[in-house]
Length: 331
Image 1: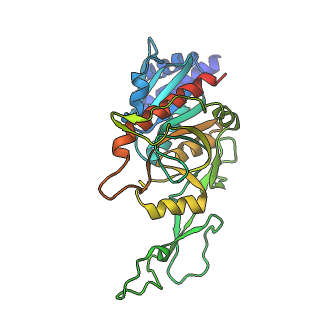
Image 2 (image 1 turned 90 degrees about the horizontal axis):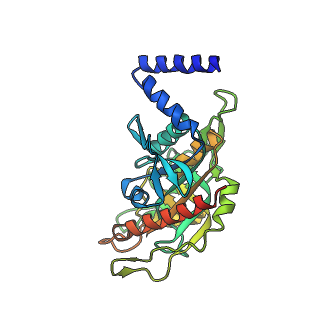
């Protein structure tokens, strides 16, 4: 115990010398973690966080309701009688990855849940439905193939996007050759926390926690919102487990690319963060699952409208309601 205390004090002094965190902050973290472990909750944006902050189900910690570090605001409290640490990560893969790593580094977290909205690629589902994918992939890591190159030093297992397949033919333009050629989807390189340092493993599809996914099968009867003021959906939204979701630093508002993601990867859920959270949790050996409500048919509607402008608040509320029910079922 004395050795551990000395190590903590040494770490504190080192961190203080670098101007990153104070000894007082480390003491606060120690007190917070002494009441753990916690469930970590990662949410992308403020409008997705609002349902949690407005809910009577969430009770902030009486002494340490929050902890600020590295531009992140970690909210500590109780949700459905479970101790939680909530962080709004911000938009995109980088913010999601950094926030998740900080969450797992600073706090005693036993599992990570993510909720929020997403685009839909599956024509069988509708806006407002809440999806829980079993697998996540980062589809923004590409090898852009040189024009005229037949073979290259890159992975070809996960397929490619051929730009000439989406050219518009006109009498003045020959579409036989597209200068953009094609991009090949590449796997991530992961360095497991308990593996050999600098010995990476390649992974494309990341599986969510098996126990979490099994629990998600019990969420079908959650009551979900179906109207925004006087604008209502064609049917009551549902909660459904789906096979795959994809994420990248791309806001997909294009019908052709949406259909490509669905046909090539069997992807239903499209967002900009979940794969990053999944990969960090896999690297850190922590259970993970994402709950994403569909706010729009990616690239759907007319050029003058976008469903997300109408249904983002409804989708945010629906994803939170499912999160609450999921947490209530955790042992």
